[in-house]
Length: 638
Image 1 (cartoon, helix red, strand yellow):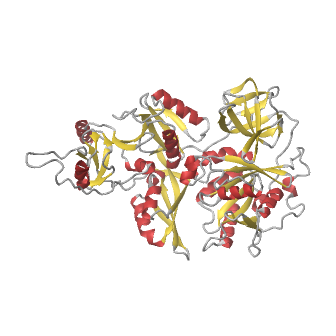
Image 2 (cartoon, helix red, strand yellow):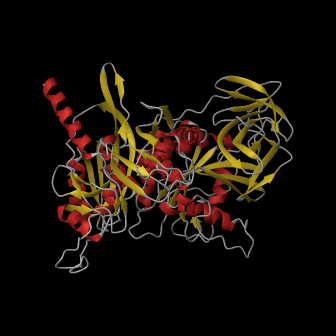
Image 3 (cartoon, helix red, strand yellow):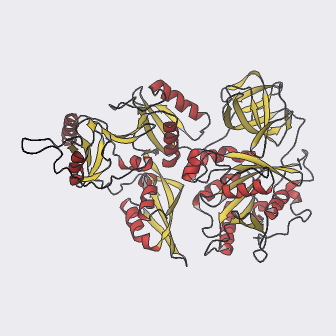
């Protein structure tokens, strides 16, 4: 293993990789395509911000702020990258296309479809935390595609940073995953993305990011540039412009593309009819600019193909030759989306949310969200939606909610496989970083879910890292629980390890719930009865309906409570006499917490303004009859 620190600019250091002598196809020395791979919160978006600012792509008077690439509202709220995006900078006459990828494993589908547009990658790791499990997943895919890595050790200014150990751990990871010897010779750059500095030697602090940019030009191979051959462009992403229409995004593998050119679309169904490209755009910094032409190696936006989909090939009309389609890993979780049938349906929706409209919206999501799967449910109003994880599905729900849709979703369920007559389920590696005083609570929480502790490591800063193996179904809702147990300081990351035989887990120990028995507005006097029986989820003034979950019971079993009950006046006293009621603050639950909280006989009602939990069967009498029938059927079976 090489030391990983190199003097940049040495001629011929990677000549065999950059420009093979016997290569029949020339390489474009004026272009580089690079993807950034990093775990959540390792500074990937901050580094892209610094690169853009130091490349002088903004005017001196522009106030660009931070998180420039995280343009999505949800990305800024949650502090993570959800959608893969690309930008470009220019350095020493070379255009560098930078592909910003999500760091969370649930959005791995975004990463898998865009890695093919790059020839190299920046492997960004935290100087304290080192390579994380989700980094391993994406790095394996990148190395299998033949991408050349550059190790970037970020946040070297952190307290208790250990860059030497981080580099060693990253080299061990490369040794395990590399597909050729050139990938093992990855250089190491030390950066502080917040201050915009980089260096190749920690003894000599950097002042700019030029060492990183020099490394990009030296070690990332230029793309192949056969501009004379028949056109081939693999569509990796889709976008929409209000004036132009649907935009297909991809890298030109071969040939040249121009506005007005005749092409064909190669899809799963075969080669389609001739179509004409109406608009050609390329990316300069954060802007899309019209171009007269673009040749092999460039990442472009093209319009004029209304039915184009991710994975299709745009080929020359006279000599169509499709490229291999994108392969994306299968989903691991599924849940039911259904039309809102609560008594409050239609009150808050700003977009029509019938079954036809929900189906159209989910089918539209399939065009860009390649890791998602949608199938028909038991009835026409139910859709089975499968995704890569709990956060993947939660982001879809939140996006649709903000678009004005209202609907109901069920508790997430794990997708299993049947192999040789055995039922298999996904098993994940779960790593939790927390303070030492939270280790006991974390261990108890994971142990009660059937997780198995593999390793535990502590550091000099009173921190601990716990590594567990657990079935995916045991990790549903765990992220929000860890944030609660660690007072918001805990960090959890997971990756799919393997599929194992289905095993019995410890039973869930959730208490019963308190459900509303009447429809109306909750008042303080009625909520006093709720808090006497358990923990309330709502406050005074909240509209409730029969069967809506309004609290957590202190004991097992569900209880119907009238939260709308008013204090009645009598001949002896007025209704307002002695009306002082002290209520505890209600428990506010996020969407992810609601999805973990509900049982199989419950649903989460999602509207643009409110998230409610309810029973599938709203009528209390019908629920009692249903439980009796289920008990009788179990007795017959035994």
